[in-house]
Length: 501
Image 1 (tube, rainbow, N blue to C red):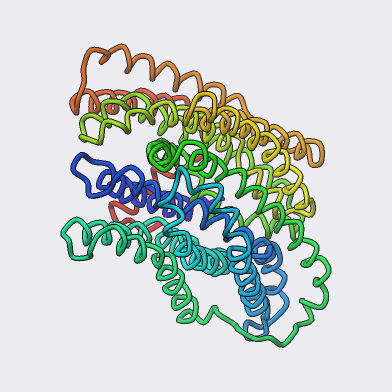
Image 2 (cartoon, one colour):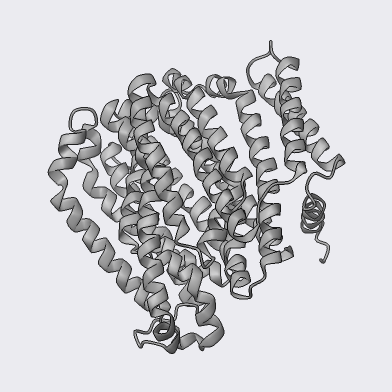
């Protein structure tokens, strides 16, 4: 666990630094006097949503294949004879060309669906293709980097460098170095490509970029298994991405890009709740893959339990800290008044993230196991629930309906995966300390809420936050709710003081 813990700490620090950069970007997008309208701000989130959908269709299941089978190549072949990277790149390029062809073939349908309420989306639709190309190849290179235990660097690129590039573009537009939103969004479409290029250079400099099309014995041995996994994970990935981004597409089609911009703020702030998961997943995925190969079920169970508890504590803390002062944050930072309508979007999106984190890294456990096909089944369940529910609730109650449907669908989705893992391996993420964590988080919230109920502005935000951190953090430490807290604090102390480990 020490290796996972160490990389999780470093990755989580970078994730939070990235969220700070993202907060700065969001503020500059949404503040009063910003050069961006709500529709223009929505376009950055729409690029991410549609870009990820294109990525899902283009990757041809190669990302999952790399995560699952790279340990076999690493253990069986000298580095220069590993052909996995070359073939995954070639197949992904073919997938991307098919996506471009699909964009041309279905252009008329896209126009019919979005011309009335979202003309800005249609104006810049073609620029999403280079953006998705960057996502595709960054994700592919990231999979190899994770397998050589370089998750910290990839987290830096994804969380800090990408957002730093976006910040640079915002400042260039704000100071009129670039001319208007048209130039901004076209340069924005290249940001993930720049990030992918830097990761490629890093892998090549580390001599971790073996590129050979000579078919190895490992490929011959596992070809059929890899092909089957690629097919299932491909369709499963599409299902998962559609389920995760269908809300933005429905809002754009039914309500328009202005409403999509308001929803985007609630979604972006809600993603803060998910921050602890990113570092944990990056560090744990290659370890889980190796543990399945070694048939070390005890290690997998231990990771499952610890991940559920630690991610629940982290997500509860972040959600309640933000929920305590959401309206004060919007008003005190002088965001455009329209963004107050994102309050209840954040609430339900945040609850959905807590459900997802509190049930541990079950997705990674399933996808790296011999039952990886079940990821497709559970994804179909998610899609079957969220698509009709999203459409019905968005039409009935507006953008909050998308948040409600996400919460309900995420609960069903995780229940299905928990039941499956328990039925197959008698594994589950739960412990009594989870109940204590929820109880103490709730008590801490209500004390802070009622103690400063009549206060507003920055003083209220600071006092509520400090008191909540002391109360909830103190109970977690005093009652030893997680066995990882003390080692984490010791590691942080050593890094701050410069002591050797």
